Length: 264
Image 1 (cartoon, rainbow, N blue to C red):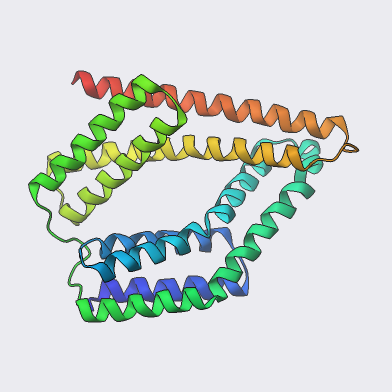
Image 2: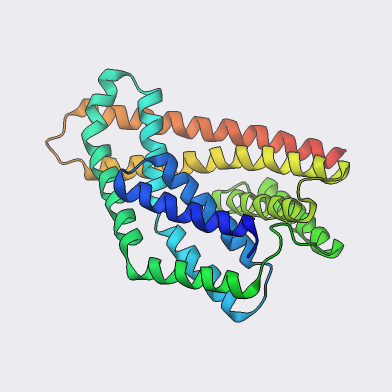
């Protein structure tokens, strides 16, 4: 097993321990990134066991989605709302966020987690991964670029959440392909494409957060009982409108970038 692969396994272990001792949203973020990188490494192999492990680790990552969403949403609330407004919705947001944290801890203590990590380590030892940057055939890169171009055209024409989400996935996949193919020494052409993917991924990631946060605002509103004061409802409605406007502004920038790239 290469030192880089061993490092990922150690990081997975350390972030699990940290989250169980004292939950921190940054530790969860790093745990999710580590799982993502391990699953990317497993994609080097096409055997059934590698595919099964990728799915299993993917389910573990999915179990953290809710906590990640509530963490980023809570951060947004603290940064963008006035103190008086925050006090109105803080108890409701904290209750939902705490529940999501408990589910993460339950998953990390589960037999499924222990078994998946143990099987990953065994597979990594047997497969003897030599590099985190396997060589890619040129046609693989071409297919990734074609998928991105197709997704971009559909997003511009359909202009709905589903098509923009598919574009986000296509951008992310091409970025990982480029990073795997080029390693630490990308060629100028690949470097330009990689930087473009990073910019688009960042913008579309921020847009995706606005979609998720609007859903969480709806969930909070649905949680309110009939005795909740109108000011709390007004704060939530105002926030929802602001988040929707932010998402629209991000997509406007993404559209401009895509059209600019299409013209060059």
